[in-house]
Amino acid sequence: MAHRTAPWLALVAAAGWFAAAPAAAAGKIELKLAHYAAESHPAHLAAKMFADGVSAGTGGRVTVSIFPNSALGNSQEILEQTRLGAVDLALPTEAALAKYVKKFDLVGAPFAFADYAAADRLLDGPFASWAAQDLEAAGFVPLYRWEWGFRTYTTSTRPILAPADFKGLKIRTPPDFVNQATVEALGGTAQTIAFSELTMALKQGVVDGQENPIGVIYSNKLYETQKYLSVLNYTYASMNLVINKAAFARLTPEQQKVVRAEARKAGDLMRRTVREDEARQIGEMQKLGMQVARPDTAPFKTATAPVYEKLKAKVGQADYDAFMAMLAKSK
Image 1 (cartoon, one colour):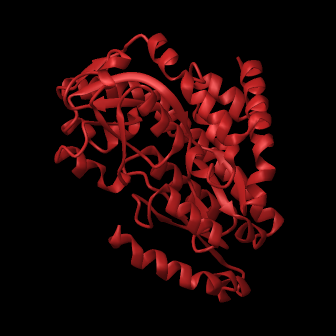
Image 2 (cartoon, rainbow, N blue to C red):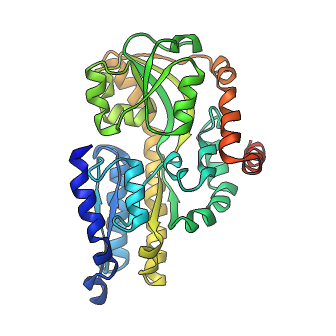
């Protein structure tokens, strides 16, 4: 991680300077947006669309500089920099947001959502307003939920067709509670490796497999080291565009409206792109030699039931019950 330390410390050191930036006095504001997706991933294309829209909508008075591909750190590190004001905008997953608002851990509950429409009904509906106040208390203003996708497993040694296939496998996960708890519930060993180091870890055989959305597997060419894709869609995750609360306050009300509107436009584009591309990407990976399986999810749902008890203990009974009630209504 040493290669990221210098830019992070430099930005943190400069954070106070930017908060009182001379550019603001001249009527111009530069916002820094950092994310961890590859430049070929729809997240980066959406970020560019957002930046162009903000610039156009504010007459060039608000500009957005983009730092993609983990240039300023992983999801958790970027979000912490955003909280501190060294970065203005971030695209964290719910699991990263859960460090500050535990409610977000519940979104990743195994097999909570049957499909994208089900996720949209809950997360664009009651969940958004339920979590917004807590996010602002933590120093973030939520702008719009973008997309990341349903996460699934790839392996190099054997396909995952039943929970028993996890036994003895080392699976890379991000440092996120649900992802790790799910691998362990299924009998595997969860191993945390930075996303920027994942490709090399797979090439060197440090781990036997990993879990990510289809778009991530494809855009990062993980099929080059992973022979098997088991489409389980065991948990859902989105990128959530958030802005530092103080940075948002620097904008005029009209500029804030533009930022919110462009966040929605770019997010809607990313959702469509990620979802529409999945079938094509799976087909292309098959042509490249990847073996694709779509196991029955029922045994996996049974095996991961203990994760719900761990979630309840982690977030508290009241929030757990409130989320489960919302989830039931959304179905």
